[in-house]
Length: 182
Image (cartoon, rainbow, N blue to C red; front, side, top):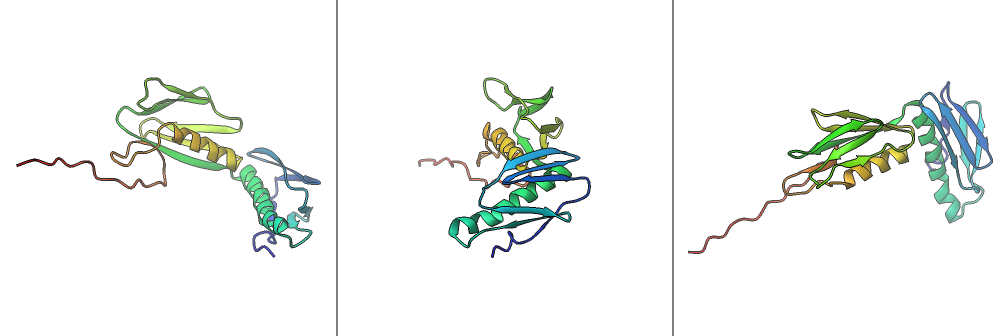
């Protein structure tokens, strides 16, 4: 039995959860999320708890058991607390500006990068510290948005310039050394 899959998910008050076969819809103060899960998993909602069970001990069902439980838990946490990721922009002349709901990034390219906010995502920008905070209810979309913004200028190991996660540490490399001949 999966250690994660057998744990029930407690649904807090103020969160509305509907299970329709393999479709789960969660609505809370931070938004609403819906997801189609694998039809093999049996999802039961009663007494403010969600339980996920599997029909057999086959390899596929075992691998889906913990995954299904975690996806539902992420939805419940997302609509109650929400998820966020922070990016730091390091480099001389690198800056970010909030334009409408999207971002305008100047990262040393020949042009500024306009990045529109995906649906359900909100940006907070601190231009003095050059930080971006990405907030949203869907954990996957928050992570994907952070990865796409980081992908415009990943941090490089020599000077440490680029867009990096706030928890990321860049391993610095020594640059070239000049060799003088006699």
